Image (cartoon, rainbow, N blue to C red; front, side, top):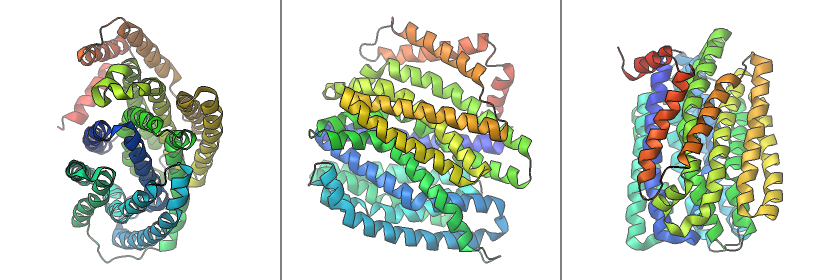
Length: 475
């Protein structure tokens, strides 16, 4: 894999880490300040923002990234076409959001959400425009460093604004206002680093028809992610359960938050390799990205599940202890979901994007059915288990598809070595003290021991160490 991809991944992973860190600082403070009930309502509102943004805005940016990477001589025309299409999506989004707000509040048994939902819809205006520049233009040209800066600026301002407004006494509206205003800053810097030049024309319909299945795909993906929270909020009249589930899912999404940048960095390169009909290079991009993702995903998932209780106490306080059990399950659910997301993203670029839509739609239907069954049987912990089953089946199905269509076999031997090492680490961790902050120290030791086990079993080689050094330290 070319270092530009690996280094670009590091830029975006660092930015995503900082975005995640700042986001978690904000989430933890909001959870402690607002309490489980109001925090659960906030979780639902923010989830609706994310799903709506994805459904109406993400597909165009992803399509732009693909065509910018392939047809750099038409970049100015592609950017203009993307802006026009995005403005149309924003207008439709705002219209539907406003008129569906009362219906959604009724579904969630919370009439007080109507005004907040309508106010939150303003987020899509500036997020939609900034996404065109950052995820479309900058990502397509592999300007990963500039894209990372835009993400960081957006996240930093969101945290600052929410802190100030909630502290000033605006509570739920203040937290949402931070999400509404912050994208304006991201839009400014994304626009500043983008240049609209005259050049060869680009047919906007080509962008639209490619964006349509991507839009559906990302909408289904986000619905799968947020389905558990919606189910809990709609099923239980007491809003505290939504607060517990919001806390558990927020922490469990750490892995996904970090590794969701992989498609952003490898897809432009895969697209470029496909345009050159270099299938070997495509396979190399996918296999190396998957292997290094697994090396980090698996141990962090085991450790997060192992130390679920002290982590909840550290971040959310004893008021959220009910979130421990779903967190222990959801951490593995999001591990498999991250792999499912990576595989379906690859499928969308190597085959017709509609194939990924089928996988995502199937996962959503399965998730709805399983969530309903398990919440009736086991309460809100059952919803977490439904998410785990759905993600695992999606992971298996997409692995099989890539094997049959791209001759990309999943590295099961390496996977089982990593899982076995993770189980050893997990069992050892059960005998170590977890009171106070001790779990942080022992967690670090267990992580080092995990990689030592992989080195002793020759899963990690000298070549791996050399490769990581070449990426981290540019020569």
